[in-house]
Length: 189
Image 1 (cartoon, rainbow, N blue to C red):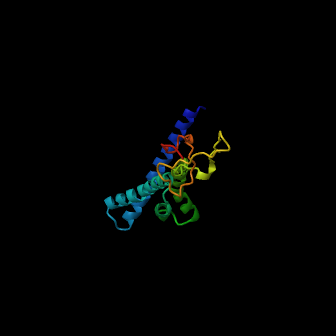
Image 2: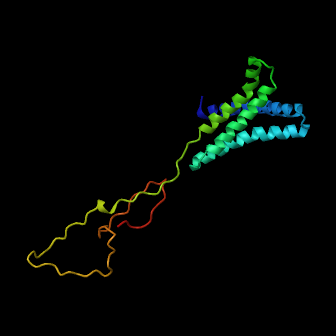
Image 3: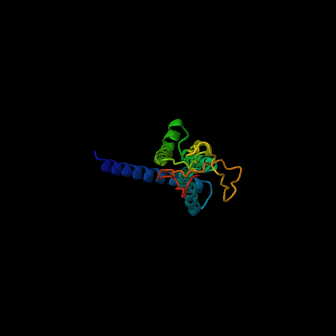
């Protein structure tokens, strides 16, 4: 089986499970809302709100992880809406262990499918600033004198150097920065 065929089969299975589990979940939330006195259209509004909110929160969780942002609140809300959906599934079931288990299958299958799909995204950490080498990594080469008995004439600097800078006077080659990091333009002294 080629990778393309496998991807197509996975997509068909994903759509089939998503469609059937979504239909069951929407119907259970709708029926539970109507059974407890809500008008028919509000039952559908509740179903849309509960089921699509869980999907949206899963996507938001993925986006926040990629951006390196906190996911605590979004994760808590995702669990809350998933449990609300699961509760609606189980509330409509026959009051027995098998009735509750069978009623929970569509919601659990859908949640497991969403978790598998959303966990396939690579998590990329936020971009870090490029590292700069400390100034004392490079030493100034010793000056060779041509006439050892006569000291060199002191040349006053054109601009007084600040005392805090300990970088050498030699010009260093620019650093090579990997392509996935921001480029630094200039010469490191």
